[in-house]
Image (tube, rainbow, N blue to C red; front, top):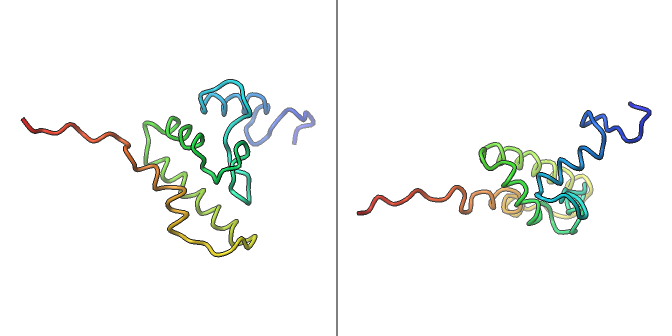
Length: 120
């Protein structure tokens, strides 16, 4: 681990650069920061909504605009982590359908747009 507190070994760079990348992905350069999950509660660190919150969804859609299957796989992995965290900390019962709706169902609505009809 580096002696420099500004270096984040997970990203291989400094934290300011990593934060700037997150802000660019979210489409802004200032503000409170990226809408990311706080574990183990899986609430947004910025707005405290259940994650993925609406700004996080918009950011993820932008980031994965050309690769919807990769977005679904990524969110499946995060959903598994969220379920594991819920079971580990004992936040109550885990409803798989609710987790599916929260993490994955929104990725399918209106994306991509339907092809033009061939009536004529």
